[in-house]
Image 1 (tube, rainbow, N blue to C red):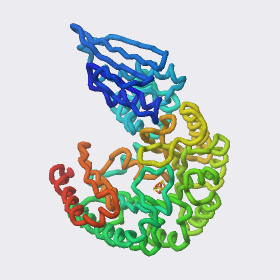
Image 2: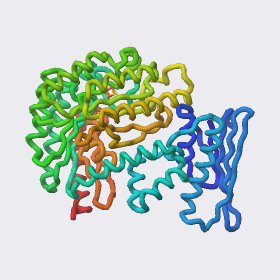
Image 3: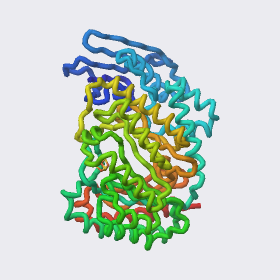
Image 4: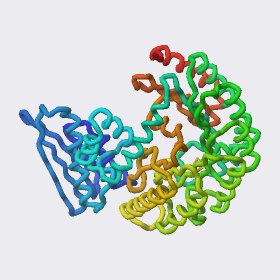
Length: 492
Ligand code: SF4
């Protein structure tokens, strides 16, 4: 598809609008008439005359052609932003008509709808925020209610954070095998065997180094999250080394939450659960993604639904009373019926929280869209699944508490965390809201520093374990940036 733009710089937003409808199609954005041959073309043009601008959009596909236009006075408040929004709305409407689809988030393409809702409600009141989402962004009432509900819970958790708070993230980028939809930096255990032990040694050093910095700055540790990858893919002894190092170097006395992502059920053993428990984790996540064995097979996860059930029961026996489970809608070979069965099985286990993701097809994932359904139909089924998930989880006493969106998801849908009251994943909210600094250790980890005024600076670790190992000292040096940041933006 070609997107032609003229007279403005809203390339990014308008390309995203096209992507809502043609998620997996290559979109070439051009600034002048092109000779590239394609059946599908959209144009978004702004031309200025005297005191006003003419805004024009057009969409063509083979013999099909539709257009729309309007004018906007140059002295309109927030003129640039309004032009961008109006062009997006006009293009969106043309594409809805052509594809017979109506993305439920309207023209909202940002990743944090809850945050936007909260910010608007704080400054202009909830009613004005709802009106803006409805009339200007064309969001459906269902999604607005979801954003409202999540943003209210988020707010109470955000308020727990202090000016000197931070969270610690530790990355374990190894998995038993690679899932076909995975877009993370994660190495299969078999391939990376030799790297794991040196990696664990260095990550422990980095944890100690980071703890010294946090101590010098008098920062207060709010939450800890060991994620991946699959942290339980490494041995119990290696996991113990990481967790003991965290305990030995940070002051955990005021820490509200310590999560270990157990991830793949086939990696959960009595020995590892004992290590996690002994080291003080308060929350674990066991992630089935689906309880349909044929779907698990389709996505290359070499475990069964039965293994999920036994991992969950094992965790309960070890005394874990805060267990999260992750699910994905839109997986290849899944149907509405089999998703309902998944949901029944999850509810019968009765976890404290469930995170429902929509499949995101990032460029680095090896899977192409599965199933025979066309894109719009797949989106509709995924939407039904999300609706069912929400109503069933509500019956289990869970409410939406955090919400985010990724690009290239089936049906342009969202990811939502549901939890029973008091079991919300605090770290999830802090990272998504950018409430406070996240000090991160390990390969592909990103330290995100946040000033009290909301300014964000990032320090990137090397992405792959072999780079992380080879260039460890250089990477530690980068971490001195944490102290420089707090010198420039002192905590008041
Ligand atoms: S378990 Fe998660 S991180 Fe590991 S391969 Fe699968 S999707 Fe990727």
